[in-house]
Image (cartoon, rainbow, N blue to C red; front, side):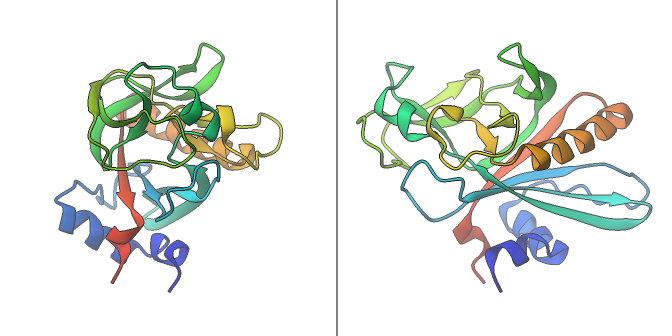
Length: 204
């Protein structure tokens, strides 16, 4: 079974959440109670939209699933030209509860914007290889948002679109995601949990 197929299988995803000890929202009567999660593929080369952002939730008593193309990593430009003197941020896998809210990304357009601290690795050797589990880590408010890339169609290289954010490749998929977030916020408030996994978490 491909990784993408596994991410569309609710029973498999629930099992992975359970093994990690993470919260999974599954009350059938609660529509749009979103399980939002990302999966970072086993590839330390930068600049590809080769990861996934997913949503699983109930609607009218049935499970709904979405698997969208994204990057969970910074692009090559920011790896080679860090904004932060400690190095470029790479979000550390984990569950971050009530950590994002709908707001304006860089004051420009609606996105899920960081409102509580997250943990990141700091890649500071200025090459185009993603250094996971590097020695330097950091925790705080760094503007690690969940947003789109190209505003009209899609992007093929990450480059400047991410300096550590979780970024959708296709704008059409991003709007699907944002619509779900809007439905959820109307019922449960403007607060979102996001969980980042690694591809190896789904190895059977």
